[in-house]
Length: 263
Ligand SMILES: C[S@@+](CC[C@H](N)C(=O)[O-])C[C@H]1O[C@@H](n2cnc3c(N)ncnc32)[C@H](O)[C@@H]1O
Image (tube, rainbow, N blue to C red; front, side, top):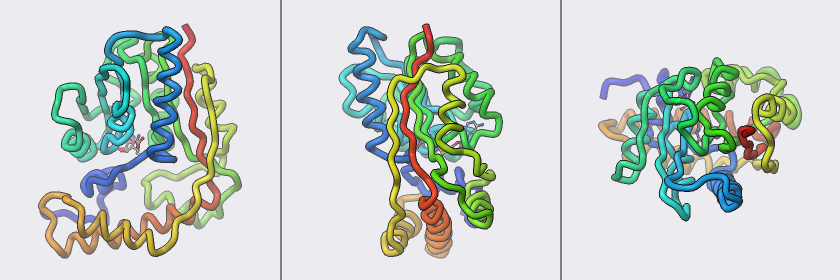
């Protein structure tokens, strides 16, 4: 494969390497979304096949994890701007027609009004340029009374400028030091009602686990068609990127919310 792994965008790199790109808080976050959603429909909010939109889904972890362990049939539709992400999510999906992935801009969704019961938004509004338009689209495609499940990093204290600059170079957008807890609360509360919320703090991981992770993803992953030299480049990039994101964790908290669309 003729590819410069150092210049690939972050979403394309993650997808090419088949990384499980989880929302902040990983499995626990998605499981807590599922518990809230189950309480919500137990209270009579929705019946029949659950229609889930995994917005800016990356390699599709959130939708797959949300669907696993559900006590009712589900259809998951994932969208992402990155074709590489859509291909990876499709490859990882269970082999049935309940999981569909399409390349699309979150700010212009190709779906009818009220076509979903649940929209999953894990750590993506930071990545999306037109975030107000994308929130409007998430609201439009949700049914009245539908649920938006969100997880975002927020700043507990301001990171130094050089770290923000380095994080910007990794992820491809410049994080704002103003993205604190209140920022995300106000962002979603413009159009949604808060249903549940909790915050957590993620601890930075050790250098040894960063190295092991980078080797596992870069060298040993089943990413297709990469020669040995490219795998070494991939592992180095993974280690460099994750080290910067790991340092960033000292300043971050995670807010996990569920919101409902007013009826
Ligand atoms: C951190 S990942 C999302 C992780 C995923 N939602 C999860 O819960 O694990 C951010 C994703 O947003 C996608 N993205 C950025 N801008 C987008 C847009 N305008 N429309 C759709 N996807 C977008 C990127 O391609 C990337 O895959």
